[in-house]
Image (cartoon, rainbow, N blue to C red; front, side, top):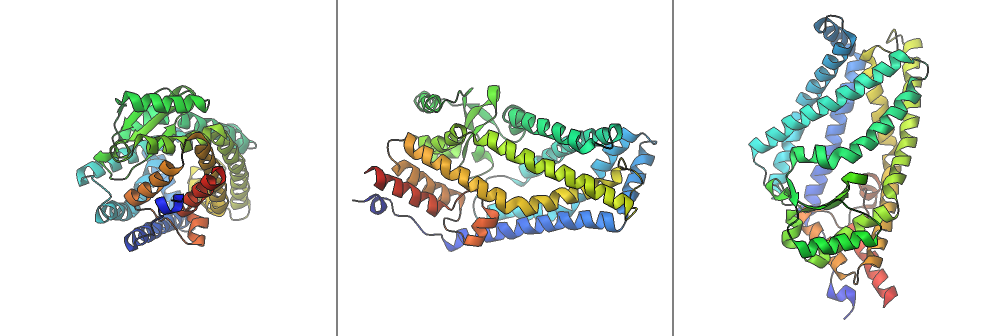
Amino acid sequence: MSLATAIPTPTDSPEARRYNRIRRWLGIADFAVGLLLLLLLLATGWSGTLRDLALNGAFKNYTLAVFLYVVMLLVIGKLLGLGLDYYGFRLEHRFHLSNQRLRSWIWDEIKGFLLGAVLATIVAEMLYFVIRQSPQHWWLIAWAAFLGLFVLMAQIAPVVLFPIFYKFEPLNNEDLKARLVRLSEKAGTRVRGVYQWRLSEKSKKANAALTGLGQTRRIILADTLLENYSPEEIEAVLAHELGHHVHRHILKSIAVQAGITLVGFWAANWVLHYAMERWHMFETLSDFANLPLLALVSTVLSFLVLPALNAYSRFNERQADRYAFQSITSVKPFISSMNKLAEQNLAERSPSKWVEWFFHSHPAISKRVEAAEAWAKQRA
């Protein structure tokens, strides 16, 4: 019996296609609302009005005024997007993918807003401090500082940020833990623990990840994965994650992000000077009413490079898959885990080419299964 016959590849259900189509339009709507807000703030002069309110509320204290301005922007943005956020919450329930109660969702939204406010304030205060201290070279200094902050966040996320929203506990399945640690050591990765992720408290979806950097690197396995997948399937999923480490995808992605961010800061500096000299929108670079303009440059640049970044990500994912094929005794658990994840997470196995090109950071599941089958035939 051939592998393809033993494990037939299911087709997408109308429900899966409908769910993913709605999610895409929801994401587009959220992007459009954010973009429209930035344009309105700049075109109407409302950003300057908010700046004046912040300065008056802070008694002309610049640092405090930046904080108040950022908070006001975040509140306005949150209020405008709250309807879409709630629709997203209801969407997960409509398609039977969520266990989260409304009270828990509201609490997560509050925590997310507060965390976002803290991080946005740190970034804004740092940015405008640099602009005031070095107006000519601020974009280079800020780029270096942002890069350091990005690496720091990647390192502390598993131990500081993730626990704000989810519960984690050491995996109590010693056999599975030993099996995964051996697989990690084989890949040259030293993990600091294997943890069970209490995802079922909020979602019916399944997931697993190798998170953190250095001393915070750990394996996290959703309890929904542990309940419904065999040890061989879990091992196959982790082997893929380890493939990213073997191919140094994290470091390469940081380098790519550093290059894009450098271009972004250069573009932001050019646009700010153009807005000051040609449009007379701002008197100085340190006028924090220009923050929406900086955000607009970042948004437009992110939109333009998204297809290229997704293509690069899909390339990395294919490399990680090939490492997984090499690391496990049979690709059958990989194929079955892919099909299970697609069914459990209501993912599209075969999206259209343009949807995959623009929206997907991973290859289509049907293509990943085909690659595994082709690998098996080559080894046979």
